[in-house]
Length: 435
Image (tube, rainbow, N blue to C red; front, side):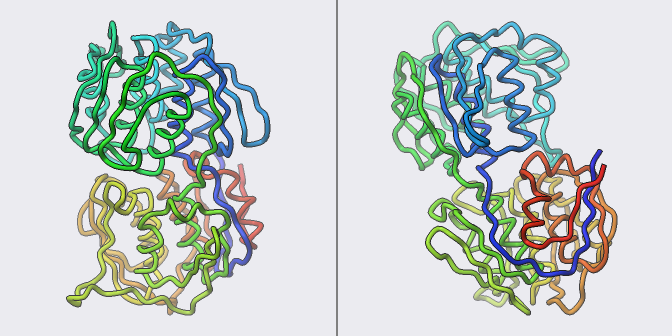
């Protein structure tokens, strides 16, 4: 297992560019299963999760050709569904949550699909109810093994219908959409997730010949087609990385330019970080963060302390709650962080408390951060990364801390951030990877 060694307490300076969006990548990689024709995807991030997903696709028979360092062509003209019942497939699927998204495209194209219970971050309950209720409404029959670890879906022919999703699940919406594009008739999905990832997926599917309207809203209408064809698709910059670098620059009092951010797709993210008092400006499609001796948290109009809470898009994405929390550590003022969607995502604050942060964990969903206002530095320590986003939050804290920090279990960070050590080194960070 690798670990990061970080000597913190020094400002960073320079230009950094966000990778391709991890969450979009996993959705559009699933969509290549919908056609036998070649699909070319560019700006694909080189992270552990996309590597694992390509292994899953390859095992199923997808031909993968590398055209450039971030560009690949996928051709699914010889899919072997039988491998999905093998222990090897179950083992691969069990370590990545996105593996559940093979079900929708395979069910739509072949009328059958299989999957092992997916893995992923341990951040609380993440039920699959939305996925399976959607498939059942389209006409699929579902079988679940006695140990609840293997799923089997079959349908003679999927048929369009109206459905109101029980929650605006991102992967659930994506899975149902990919099944519905090849269903007979019209499917209407209300309370659909409308994140930029879904916008991108639906746009890609339309470029493949699907007929989806309402893209970007929570009401999607899908007119089923007989088949889809190949296309070329470019993945958006990762908005989670943009937010991560914003928080990193503020906490380390650095001058950093985040380049090529696709600012029109960032939603409420810039607004939220401005609420924390961070000074930055948008220049063309770049975000320039200025060094600050102090950044003052805005209070609410009634005088109460600022609350930052996650919500389905267009609300503040839960993937940046950990980043907002760690950024608030050195703010001038107090912030209530309310993680509504996952009950275990704040269970890393004890590590920040050990570093000297003034944080009170009220319950599994809420934490109060009393900002240090850069009057007292965090201190280096040894800690382990519990999940992708918490891991990067600990990394940001370590970059701002006095002394040396060691972060273990960095494979979690590798799942979502490509070549992070090398990219931070270009900004002047004193960080290295050690076996």
